[in-house]
Length: 321
Length: 286
Ligand SMILES: Nc1ncnc2c1ncn2[C@@H]1O[C@H](COP(=O)(O)OP(=O)(O)OP(=O)(O)O)[C@@H](O)[C@H]1O
Ligand SMILES: [Mg+2]
Image (tube, rainbow over all chains, first blue to last red; front, top):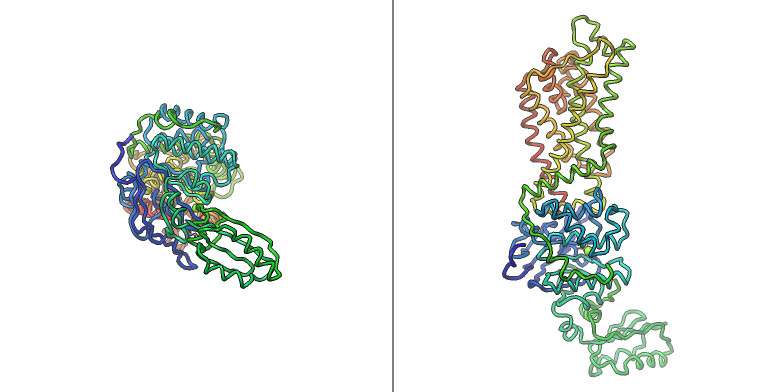
């Protein structure tokens, strides 16, 4: 293994990617600045199309940036891609296993691509298969594996050469809850060993459960960045109360805006959303306001400060991916 | 995965890895060999079926029923049809198999979930991965070319045996190697330029005319009665390979001069390899 490089494990400066297609340009990433320290577990959190995979693609040298710079372990991803590839492992969002090879051979050859002798590569492959409970799928073809098995095999593949930085693009998407929790355990174990990890996810609770720091991204931009606790304390200090009426939102609701402890009131058709520092009693008042105006309540929810409310506060959009 | 966590075992126990470009390159070639070994029956069938069938029809059936190529032989002292056929068959096997060996894997790797990512993340520059694919396809093409010899030497009607003798080994090897590389690179080029989903078109508008008009069944000089066609076929790379192999294997049959086929093959191979690695890199990196 190469000695740990000084400086950040990942650094991007004004990183940009614009895809040009016949139907016009898509600005997938528009000026992202990130810094991830060695040993850190960093999360990129954002909805579909936010630019997470594109960012990971650029950091893993597979997507060519159209602006800005990115360095992994001190090496520029465009000018020194081979040095970068030596030091990283990636679990892509899709199944990118080598379909011509068995599960075991996928790991064996990954080891050999990274300079292991054939014998060491086979030993390493067996060791990883056992650790991830895939020994009985040893001879299986990647196409014959379940989604969860394929994901686990891709994680094994990313670990074969003991990368300095591990990239995981939505590693738990499509996994059943039990497998997901198991995978979290594995990732925590890796982090305890000092593995630097960059993970993307749609799931708020995943970022909260795993990441030291997160960046909330949408439309190719970082909306907020910090520790999970820090973010929920600053950007998302609000509790978010959402009420959906079965008729137009009563006008009296708008006056809540002037109340102490209430940040914002957003009315959207039959739905009202109140962002408040001190939410006590607000939900009851919203329901009462409805009855007074002769409309019923079809749905009501109160979200305590969390990454989810951070997202709502930052984007004004529901986070339901 | 159960409760196993990778603490202590997984990562730390990894043996030291020292990737170099050469090691990674050879590991990728080893992968090709492994895949070929797994698909041995289907690969071998694909490689051998074409020469076997052609030789059977042209060197056995047609002479037996006294038509077609047999007419060459009936002109007295002229070479038997199988003699004319051997270099052409070798060329056509090399070109067909080289192109197919390069294109078939790409259809999976560039579309189906982009499994090329598996190798694109290996520690080599992406153009070198393209070169590796060309060499792997060229190796298959080379073997396919060699397999034609046992086929034609054993399958023919009585008195119709080819008179083939490798007079000029360096020339023969030069033709086999450049021809194989050219077809492997051509396959990679076509496979990365054409949308893989439309690759059937490739067979009808590229491979078929290339073989039919590749001077496989007659020497290029024999077309001088159809001047326009003779000139048009100069755009077909297979013509130069057929003629070059004719010069190496059956010098008694008319063939082009070395400066013509030699320069086209050598320069063409260099240009197509360069071009194909570029288009490949563009397809792999987005
Ligand atoms: N190869 C491509 N060509 C053109 N546009 C692309 C390409 N890849 C991604 N895009 C566009 O770039 C934007 C960002 O996509 P990206 O895959 O990075 O998002 P994401 O955050 O990973 O989304 P998801 O959560 O759905 O995986 C999207 O609008 C997408 O349509
Ligand atoms: Mg994605």
